[in-house]
Length: 298
Image (cartoon, rainbow, N blue to C red; front, top):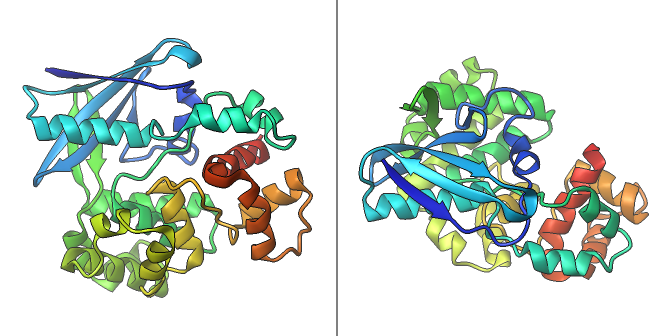
């Protein structure tokens, strides 16, 4: 058994951070067992299940990941990167709090949700499929659509007594038939969009690494050139996959409601008005908006 200790800079409320994976039912890509989470990664063509455990108070959390057997260096690197994404460890939470405590809107929210961090999607396909299935439907139904896809084409693995799925590969979804997705209650358009995105990633016409190395404007341009990916989906890709700081998904209904509730924005305000208000938070917009959404839920 190989164990990987991870450093956590700043506070981390594990329960609040991981609540997203439990909000709508059992997530096949995330298996919980007490104070542990089991996930499965694809590393150089191999599916690698791993477990991560946590201990300690919010302001001094310890994270440790375990992989069966003697893990190769690339597996250690991949598991470390995945844990950092899932637990939002890459965010400058201390810098955000220093700014937020001086902000009349954010100050009560950071006190109430101390240690909460956004989680990031592990793969480009997973993040883009998540955005597509959530378009213009309630999030419970979107979760079911994603769950069906994962159970049909993902790869099942186990760690100890927990079973979990690795998200499907682009090449697998690229070969799927529209009828198969339609049988899972995907609309015709969403079925087409999911397959087209998978084909773009599988063929290399859309490269996840190139997107990660591009500026925000280029990412939006590249993504919105793909059928089924609009500005809303591109903004959430920046926020919840790439973890960019200065991004505001102003076209999102919940984001609009949060700005109305906490910032006094008119319900009929244009998206550019919401983005202008959000710009006051600079490089911390992503975190600020997630705290507004957390406040809206509670």
